[in-house]
Length: 64
Image (cartoon, rainbow, N blue to C red; front, side, top):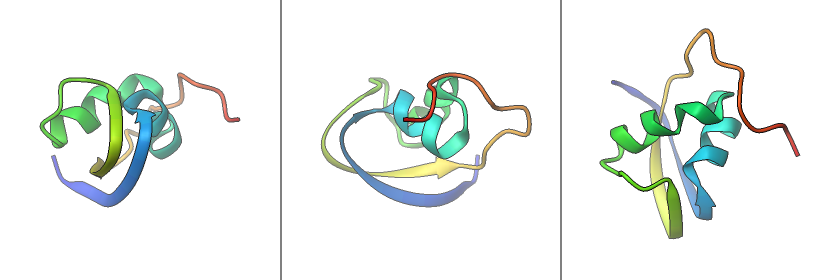
């Protein structure tokens, strides 16, 4: 899996990061796998590699 970019987040969830960055909260596991994580909770300041979005993404959390 090749990362398209790197972001820094604080005190959030991978569900929210996946919804914002990949367009589908259900893709949280792709971010977790790429970064060697198993827990979707992000505590503190963390730099994450973000994979390329899938062509058929589009589910999960609504924009807010």
